[in-house]
Length: 100
View 1 (cartoon, rainbow, N blue to C red):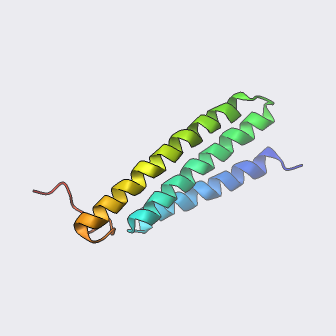
View 2 (cartoon, rainbow, N blue to C red):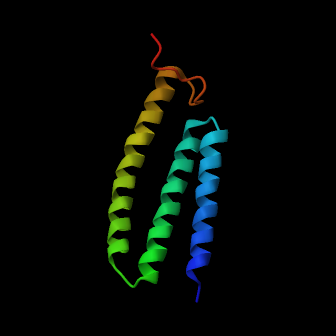
């Protein structure tokens, strides 16, 4: 049986990898994937605590979070495709839509 500490350490490692990906990489798709990795790390933590406490509330919450994340992925990828079509790049440093 895997202990709660193992799940929490794995979740922390995944979250840190996601943060590093957001801070270091400049490609919009990689940044987007890193944000999803952080979201899944938090979901893993919630599931680990729900299993530890023998509660289904965490499972239901994670199911709802994943449903919202699926919609977010669809909208986010559509925005990235639209940015690529208008700017010709998905490099976060070269995208400056807020400038006049």
